[in-house]
Image (cartoon, rainbow, N blue to C red; front, side, top):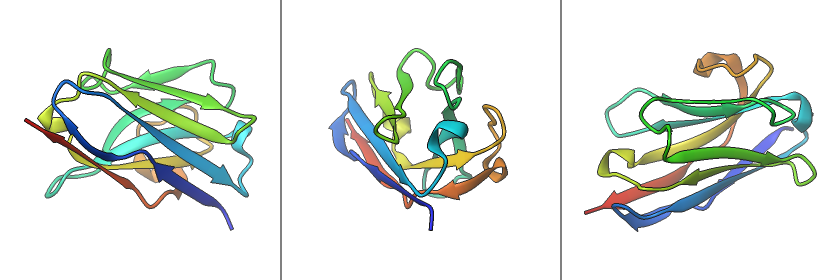
Length: 123
């Protein structure tokens, strides 16, 4: 059974940084686009960023571009989301996902999902 396990969430002050990790198992990791999404209370799930299987191509949402960086280590079957200059509006549950559609921004294109990790940004 495919497993994606996120970690690294927590409470951070505005302007601070966090690095999220997502460890994958039982999935052809290097062949999958890995995506990060987030969902704030009362809001729809929102695309944050994605990275291709080789890591050669990435895309990110306008709201996080220049502040968040996505990367992956295929030897470790892990994808990362480095978040800097965090804002109050970045508060959400962050999910990683694996899918076969190249760099998709659409949640339904991702077949596998982690359980999510909470990121809370305080003033």
